[in-house]
Length: 139
Image (cartoon, rainbow, N blue to C red; front, top):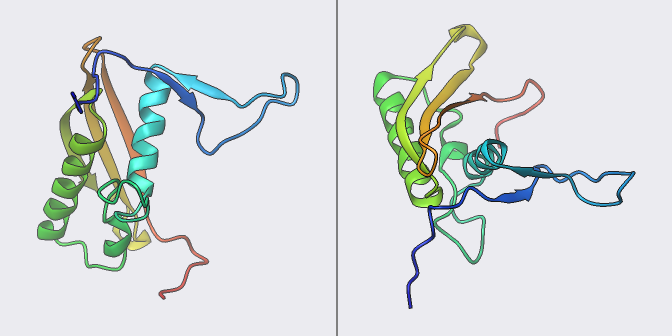
């Protein structure tokens, strides 16, 4: 039995977060690049261990929200993100993961992921603003 995930398809799936079309009474779907970016969003927003049947799925970014953003922490975060994407999104090849702080006093980090879709060789960039919303408190 072959347990590898095929990388020769891009696919089609539910838009995340799920929304419904009032006209067709169906769920909004996404495909191609939007499907891959949806997948990146889900992987980056899922905590490791959150999915019962796939404990390794996701990232540990939630644990790092209050850590000081030193160069060492940026390297650790980029490596963690790269590893999570390699393990969970076989349709792309990661070219780079960069973390930048456009305004350090805001406590926001932009995570920029550069990738290539394996089947089409199309390049893409996905940027995730990573920050603690103003109305959140430390638990």
